[in-house]
Length: 248
Image 1 (cartoon, rainbow, N blue to C red):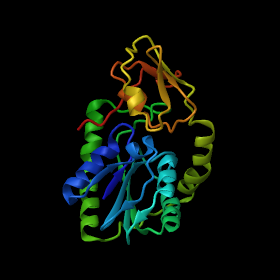
Image 2 (cartoon, rainbow, N blue to C red):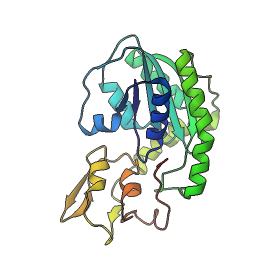
Image 3 (cartoon, one colour):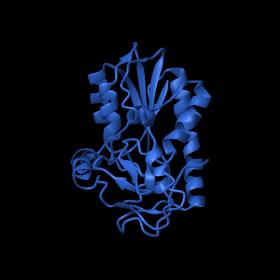
Image 4 (cartoon, one colour):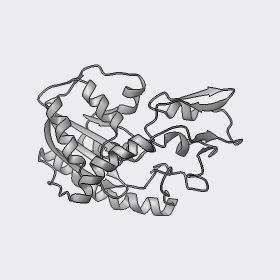
């Protein structure tokens, strides 16, 4: 069973490739969170979480959902994290999560995918993004092979910088940066409601055919990157930047 969370499609791409290789069922964590569904999940064999990296750890809303959800079965558990550069010492916190949930932890693997966090960074242009994804494919295939054989992922090495990024920087990131108040729609907005549909936290409403953001946000970038008219900006941070979606 593969459970995946995605903002702009990187995790979806990886999850589908692994599912095609293994024949495992795909479940969207986005839909589970959006519907506030924390009902028990029966797992026959293995559990594979495919998630993005938010400030060198798995997204907090994903961790919170896993904490609230009961997984029934003697479960071998893998984590597949996609990132722009590094996952830091995310493994430390994943191990703690698995211990709390009594899941048999068999490792985490990191896969570099195109950057989408345009609230702070630049997303790559299409040709560069395609090359990054092509470079990721062998790592995805390697992950699938290891899982198919029932082996653990190779152990990851962490360092002081990675440890600080996953602890102190992660805390500061959520405290000061993960806010929705800078999101605004300009006059290109046609009131289509794509942003409302895509928000996993139900944090966007249409008022007068314009999106209005509430106080819940995880900075998944789904609203800003999937807007069909590129009408959404995040203050001045996103102006003029490429909107990225994984469409391969």
